[in-house]
Image (cartoon, rainbow, N blue to C red; front, side, top):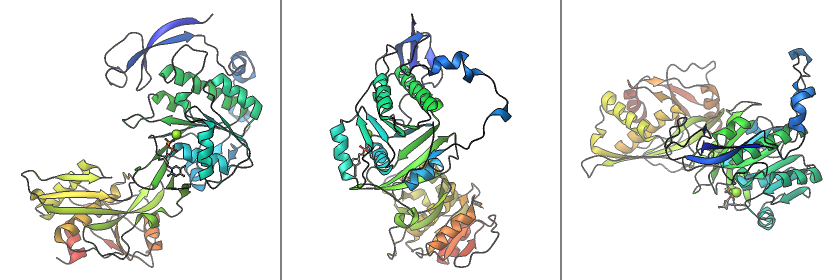
Length: 457
Ligand code: TYD
Ligand code: MG
């Protein structure tokens, strides 16, 4: 008979406390502790595997040399961006968690993936939508898979029955928050339920070598809902993000036990599903042909991929006492820092001016190499002079106004060269093993020299 105990779980980080408190001592958030029942020695709906591991073969310690070193086989999907993000497909026996804000396209991405996997068998379990709704969505997508099985089961026991019947090559669960196990007595969506049902799916996946992809909701704060705990249980954590008002979506890897976390996939949301973007830089730069002041091109790195992004700035006289600063797609604190550098090191009186900054495309980039392009856009708008459209920028700006080297500069330059840019502005500390042919690297030591180089004043 299972022993029942009461525990207090933080709904934000999943930490367990023996008594109720106003603040979680682990993550410091307030009013997140909720009383939940915990059963000691609980059984799981996925039978057998856990029992066997206690006294059977699996618990015997082996020498490293005794373990067969077969390379993990991967289920290669037809979605090149998804494969790229995961480092070459979904690893057999892996559990992958896909997080993202509501409406960003998680269900669409995985349904499309399932349809493209023909002739592999896929079981798509959705507690969120009825099979009819999923079918309607599937008819919008230009793919077909006669071996796609849909189910709206919400009990893990039921999911395991379906798995026995279908024997799929891939299991997709939309979403893990809607799934519950009857082995513990807690309401769906609670941390205990979430952890228990994920643990059962992990057991299933390891025992049967079937890969599993779980969809997880994201909280307002941008964390995978409640369970930081889930991130420890699963093998890879993916995040689907983007601005719902823009077409671009990015698939980012936050954790990957089988590869690097620096790869990333780029998609466009179309009327008929998500389309892979093989050359994101080309589709992100929209100002081609138009000569506009206040606009510059940054050569950034998203993961390992060079990405050219357009930065726009507007500098105008401040009408009110305190000048306004606003940044979209860029850290506002960093913008203030760059403005202070411009004021102190280059003598620009920006204290009486409003500055608005916009990184176009709705893509969040944290690469510091964007700094120089931001400064160039601000200077261009301030002096109302255009930057020639075939110039691009890649350098970090330090507090003394010096230009600092960026990492992986060569792939960045060759991407800019491929797209027809003629000059790239960078730090003198970035050494190139070979001078590029079609594009001229312009080395600038300080921000004060940028105006001279760009506008000759
Ligand atoms: P969805 O996959 O339901 O988002 P999530 O599962 O992350 O909540 O995607 C919802 C949005 O995608 C919805 O606003 C409609 C849009 N969409 C398209 O633009 N084109 C399509 O082909 C499909 C299927 C959806
Ligand atoms: Mg959904």
